[in-house]
Image 1 (cartoon, one colour):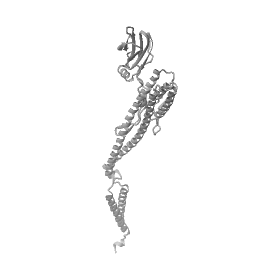
Image 2 (tube, one colour):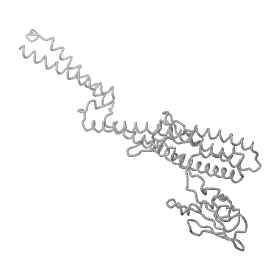
Image 3 (tube, helix red, strand yellow):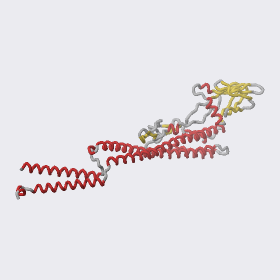
Image 4 (cartoon, one colour):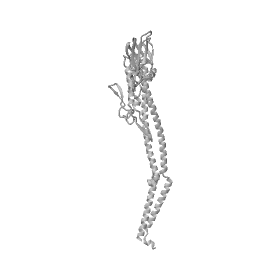
Amino acid sequence: MRLSNNIMYQNNLDKILENQQKVAVAQEKVSTQTRILTPSDDPAASAQALLLSERIDINNQFQKNNSYLTSKLQTEESVLQNIKTSLQRGYQLTVQAGNGALSEQDRETIAEEMKSIQATLYDLMNSKSEDGKFIFSGFQDSNQTYVFNGATGTYDYQGDQGNHEMQLAVGVTLRSSDNGIDAFENVDERLNVNTNTPTVGGGITGGSVYVKEQAQFDSFHKANYDPLVPANNNLQVTVTAGIPDTYAITLGGTPVGGGNFTNDTIKFQGMEINLAGVAPGTADFSLAPPEKKNMLNTLEELITGLTNPGLSNDAYQEYLADGMVGITNAQNQVSITQANLGGRINVAERLLGSTADININHKESKAKLVELDMAEAITELTKEETALQASQATFGRLTQLSLFDYIR
């Protein structure tokens, strides 16, 4: 009889503990509003929910990357726009400096404003992003982008050609920066001849060569310049005595022009060639190789021309022509950088929207797997609580029974 009572006691106690566990589980499901507390509750759904959670976390990181990248690009875009504004003012001043009625004092005044523009550009080109890194230094973004080299009198680039990238979606990365090589250094100088003072021989005792019609000369230069064989770029003007005197022009030994030499000036392919002396004789010069120059150095040379009162008019006009072409090409290069940057911002904005939509779908799918039907859960909790109360009441009555209760 004692064994039977012990077994009955233990069975009822186990039932109470089991019901308490069921109530605790039901309560936790209601409080967390999830139907899966452990993977064993629903292994398949649990695995799918875990995968969706990982995808949601990855997309959340993509969204953070997107916000960071967009902020950096918007900062860069603002800097580039300010650079273009400064360059536009520099161009206006260069055109103004070409007014033949200006005095030396007027040119000095223009030069002072040009120095101010140069200083502004120097600051802008050395701009930093929100993280304190130099925007245009490439991978060397701890280095100041531009510094003035006192030994050469030039502004030198201190970065590299690297471009940082950020991942904004699976398989999608976008550049988060533009290096100074692409934005500022890759600017074409004005195409020109190698010297304004040709080498003369024979009866020709002196001369000068200046590009007067830039567009015409540019076409000739681009069509004929040979980067591999320097001798093919040599121009020679040969003047032959006669009635009238004549001239012939060769490029790399090949005839390219000629005519009567009736005065001291020859106009050829946008060039104005002035020769002094008598026939026969020669003048030699060549096509200069294409060069690149950043806007700071373009302005530095322009300021030099504006502040040099001893220049001839032709030499002064050379400075202005170099400045106008250099500033225009710098503006174009900045515009190209802006356009590329704007395209990346547009892509980032579209990706941000699509990533948000994907995350919404992932969250909805996860909710269907793990979220609780509250009405059903509360009903289940009530059922388990009722079962627990019943088992507790039964156990209470059993513990109060004795042998005398059975023999009444």
